[in-house]
Image (cartoon, rainbow, N blue to C red):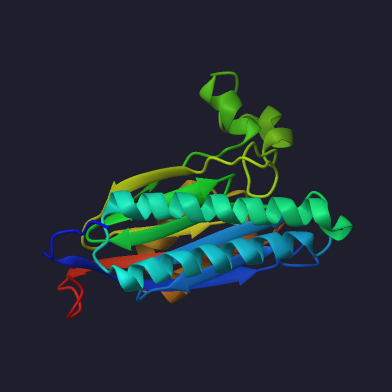
Length: 264
């Protein structure tokens, strides 16, 4: 297991908020945050009554636990090793959910989207499957760090639709990748360099389906220095816009500092 150099590292301030929204009876989203370990996982379950909660809960808890255990054992783990650990954990959890769905009729068809962030040194390793997203706010500007695994995004990538085309509404929630749906899952994983003051947002589609990126950017620009308040306001705005789905957000504020003693 290789290590990073022991220069300044990113110190993290995490906040999260989740709500069932105004239309759903249950909240099938699940969150797991561990700021000291530098791990955050958000999962958006699907598959009928209670089953989605089982899939998302298992995914968030297990993947966060796997990554936190690694980070505790190797605080300066290299990005490459962290990517591999994230890949292996997601693949294992995919297999567990897939097997459970086939074994128990109550869980037939269950699955979950996923977006996960793990931090080491001055980088974030971001993994996702489905349409849960990661964004970065830097110098007051918001950009997406992930691309949805959805039928709509495929049509946009092929130039067949514009993102704001109403014809795409019926495809918006038809996802092409998720945990537990197929025996073989390849999560998309990337490494992103971070700077002092960057703000990372993980969210379920219940947020970005209700409020556009410009609105998300404005809220984060005005309130991002207090992540707890910004997370609450994002959820409130999504509910005010209709709250058609469960809404979940994790915000991770970053600042450069010296690593804790013994973290080399």
